[in-house]
Image (cartoon, rainbow, N blue to C red):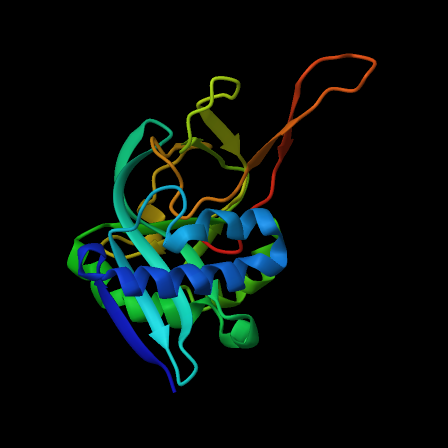
Length: 224
């Protein structure tokens, strides 16, 4: 039995953030320590911070989480208001629960926010997982679309933006799916919600070159 709590970010207390921080470290940790690192020190977000959260609880504790953030993105030449979905996580022992539960819990909130679409990005390895949800027409997957986002942390040796080609998932809220604007580039004009997508590691040079190099590792989160 799951009990859902959907609320605004400002309604969370310090204890809530600490509990979520531990939940994210345990949920993302198995996919790599770099995914869990942003959630150290009681931090319950990575990249952009959510506006609202849907948190599921069971008898053990937090079972699932999804964050929401309203923002304007640019799809091709069209400015579009969306509710970005991200920071999706499920406790490892409940991985079969599926994304449908989280999106279903947020549906009334998405309508309340007055957006035409909800939008999220996922890595290609999650395609089968997301396609099962899209089969009933509740969402659609876009491929061949590049997404450009801001890098949350400033580093003089790194670019200020990154461009990826993930799976783009769109959910109709106030308008039908066929009214999603055309375009092969989405400008997020901000950091991804819940982004731990790219880890930059500074390495020491080899004795031969004597130079510093930057290694870019394109690791993606498990959710939109």
